[in-house]
Image (tube, rainbow, N blue to C red; front, side):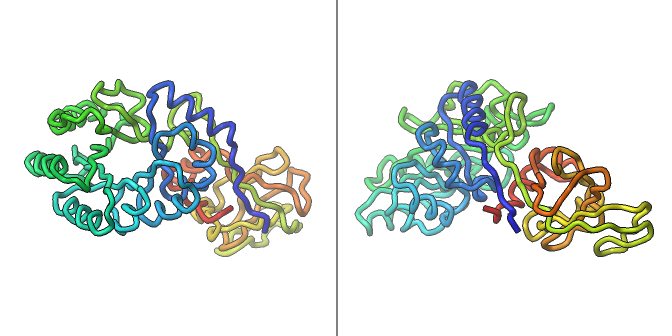
Amino acid sequence: MNNKKVISQENLIHNFNVCQKAFSNLCVMVKANGYGHGAKVIVRALKSKASFFGVATAKEAIELRKAFSDINILVVGKATRFDFLIKNNISFAVDSLNEIKIAEQIAIKHTNIAKIHIKINTGMNRLGTKSLNEFLSMLNYCNTSKNIILEGVFTHVFDADCNTSHFYEQMQEFYCYVKHINNPNVIIHIGGSFVLKHKVPSFVNMVRVGYFVYGYGKKGLKPVMTVCSRVIKVTNCKAGEFVGYGKTKLKHNSKIAVVGMGYADGLMRRLSNEYFVNINGRLCKIVGNICMDMFMVDVSNASVRVGDKVIVLDNAEQMAKTANTSAYEILTAFNLLR
């Protein structure tokens, strides 16, 4: 059906440079296949610029390591496959002393080193320890182990994009933990992108960024991904006829174009009868309910032929507003497109 994602490397590098002006040492998040953009494409463009690339799962880390032998990869989610991660020099998060002990035993078995990052729960209540005593036990254990390297300690900020942000409260809580670290080589990092809108504390030496790198959330950034399809049929319809599933009735005689993309390709069904796509420079409204692999558009006021390019997405925030969701969900919905 000629559906594809077009990635602007120029915009990607521009966005990274904007982020790096705010904070020099960055971990670029490429989980969920690079927020739907294609993780390998993003890594290839930024591998000489970013300090780390962050993923959510061991599976994502495995795919990246197969493609890139010379990048720093960090699993920030609940890691599994410790054996693979350790053997392939992949860093991973832990949030309990028990996980550190398990990682150590696997590292000993393989005569290797486990690079760990301890996650602190400073208020999001997702992952991370929120026991200072446990954290101190974890620190002490790392200091005495020959097979564990405490590479980093980190937390996640849950509302840095809000006007009434709890950012500085979280940073105060985070400092209660990291002030006990005596090793200057330990990476102290926070995320996500919106922390760059605040004054990052001096004890932090890396910031994890995702949303900003992909072109959203801050003035001066440029969307990296465009999603395109093609017109596959044009039909003249009369007033009173129906279009698509669900009995959408035409009020006027209309020229209807069929586009070869649907909700199976990532175009959310909730955009039906609401969203506009760009065909030959004209905004044309979707008519009828979006189908699994097609949707229909009113092109009565446009010159459209079979084969014409359709720009389905060029700004995820605009689409998200119509769909009443977040741009994150919009971007990752197109994950399977190439």
